[in-house]
Amino acid sequence: MASVFACLLFFNVQAAQAADPWKTGDKVIYGIYLSALAVDYSQTSYFLEKTNYEESNPLLGKHPSQGQVNFYFISAAIIPAILAHFIPGKYRTPALGLLALLEIRPVLHNAITPGIGFRLPF
Image (cartoon, rainbow, N blue to C red; front, side, top):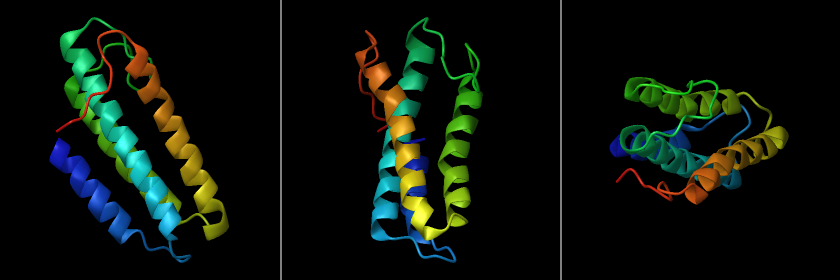
């Protein structure tokens, strides 16, 4: 799964060409989002395997399978890039910034949860 995130990070950021070209800052923010998403994926996978915590993401449910987690995180990596492609340039940076902030929040929450901390997928 780590290689999937590495490929998504490289190819999505490289292929991010819209009618309004992506600025370097947009690509950096999207890379930050993907990095936070990779950490969140790793934390989620870890706690599903090693602990009895319940997932708080309503899209996953309280006890998702590893397959559901994989599908969700791959979708969460690809769909925002597709949507951002169609957002006009002046709105893309704030939209991607908000997306990154919304992803960083659960990572920080998981980091302070006893027994989870920061987990990287590689």
